[in-house]
Length: 456
Image (cartoon, rainbow, N blue to C red):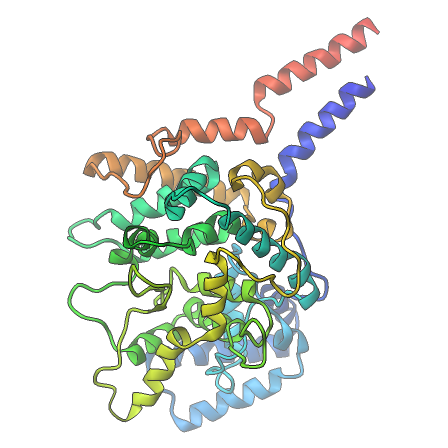
């Protein structure tokens, strides 16, 4: 009986691990903050007034008198500290609503502040103890000798062997290569959404290995450059847009504005830091850089022969705003923090991150996925709500049917796995059978329990 009880507990605990959501004490979500505000009539009145101001500004520039009225409402809301101090969680189900609240209370004064991230700030000690040591592990794995094998190909194969990575990668490749109905171009919005979902829910051990794999030849470099399907995710057929115009469109979107501010804060360079980063964390910078992928300001490698990254834009026609345009470009092309973080990922002799000793080399990451799932940041990136899972399954089924209709074969799927052979549903069932108790297993356990009670 005791053994059976332990077995049942293990089965249920194993099936519930993925639903654990880490919470950081002292961090208030902006959705909770505005719900608290709505319970007070005066706060509700002021917030709704500011919300109306934001909507009006999106249509046409406010008059000086209207802007003054909005400013008065904003100043009155300063007394409600929860609204001023709240933050949002990357990739969460409530992220769009949360970001809307965050930027609304900063209108009009502070609305243009894109130097401070709206996302919850992982304390320095947590960063050093978990995320940077994780990056060190990724670097250790990426620097293992591969006997001349293409590292980006190896990263793709490892991703395919991890069911979640393989499924979400196939999903974004399909979304970014399928032509939109009645058009010869892809659906960029859908492509961006699938890219963000991949980067938010797949552990960095896999996603970073795909994005930042080291290359010694142009063929490998081209595979790395095409990882995010540039022809759909950011490239324009005719010409490159002006960087000032690109940023203007970005700042009109809460998500892009937020990811831009997050990158600005976490990838700020410093000449006095060994890592080149003001925050002394290349890992945090890479995470912020990856957060921009799937937005209007999606960056990528500029060629197949270097690790230099930039946005798909130029400064032609900038006029007297030439220097301001160059500042946007230099956020990537002349950013020592970002450059060192990317180079350190692909270095054959990587320097220790933040003084943290590198762990001993581990086998290919797909042998470690059980261990990875219970780590802090993997849990943050793989927060899954049951409703989202159901919706994703329906979307995947629709996409697979559409793929058959258009005969779309997703590129870059180099290793024949259950997922990329077209057996997505079969692979998913097998994965669930390993991670959560199936009906047959539960029935057998219950029968065993009844038999023990009757006979004993």
